[in-house]
Picture (tube, rainbow, N blue to C red):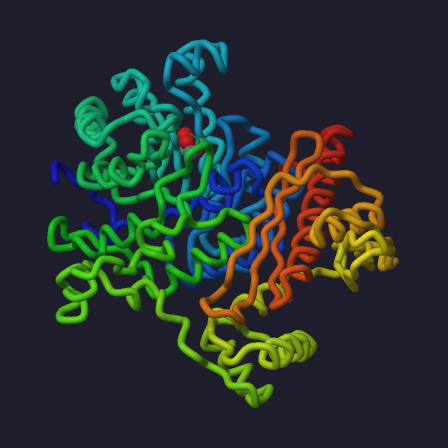
Length: 530
Ligand code: KIV
Ligand code: ZN
């Protein structure tokens, strides 16, 4: 390790800054509603992240509201709101996070000439003045202020150091060095940190942070290089989601730090047993399927196919395994409930899984459990997690699939009939035929809701193994250049498909409502400075 920051509670403790809900949510096709964002933020708190970047409040009233809800309800981690180096952005960020026990404003401005000339169309002097004013303004609200020189790795390091020193002078507590376009390499990033410390010695008095994108597949390696060079905060996202090729994957960097502690001595506060569940939740809610061979959380991350490997692992696990599936919580598929289990047993099992379900929600979960227990031989923790998460999807103000049936039509084409509850409470119904039953259901939903959105993606996956596995369907819809996803879970794939389609539609239409409010002008944007 070349150098370290000095103001951390423990010099080798790495702070995990999760940006799943901000940079991650900027991935194409992801549009989470407020309830979903709060659900993910609660799980991130259970996972033990240090900072949750909950959103970019100025960008829409929906984002503002979600950050505000998270700041009010999620305890433990610092709650951070992103802001460009502009007064209005910083005011909105502060208004959104001020109810948190630990608020942080994260403000950024580009230091690369490419961005200065072509995107911002101003000068280096403007950038220096902008950074100074932004950090000073953020600091007038909030003790904890993070500053990022965007596109730092393609910028002149001496100029970037000068801008960072200004941010420190104005009171920034964390300085983040983004590899915005995923361009740097581990050696280059290490050298960059060395130069920053040389040109701006005051950086040794604050926490440095890494924020790496994965365009060349180096996000984790570069982040690790930055940590070895002295940074003690790593910005990452669950399942590596984010702009373009995504961000540094949280689960990969957390396990790298844990498994190779012998090599570097660093630690995190992550409860690694919560990793798999967090990954499944983010995948389910975003519609971003985790590739089977994904490090740490992929279905095959702990599977041994070759005879030699299987033989070795049976004799001694460490022959071909560097970590244990239980360490990341991938062992939660043990049987937890039998066919005759009662309401109490279900509530206990759900509590063990981290869900507090009571009253009407428990009754509804019990009903779904019984339906599934009638069809499946064994109900596992993964099944319970899937059905409870599925139940939590429907909210009073959204569209909901109320009924559906599919029969063979007169000309042997399947014919579907659906009933959809509209946000007003009215139930609309329609029938449609299609080449296959899924097409017929989607056609009927479109007719009933009077919509005509483009179906971009349709995925089916089994929640567990076995012939009687629950099916999980993801649908991505697109309209007017925006897309949204929805998921549904059932032993009946057609029912899961209908639920997923209606939820995607709901997410798309909720988003549209937000867009319309923005288009109507800033006076409708509900964002006011204090
Ligand atoms: O990639 C990037 O530069 C960012 C900044 C806002 C930190 O996401
Ligand atoms: Zn980014």
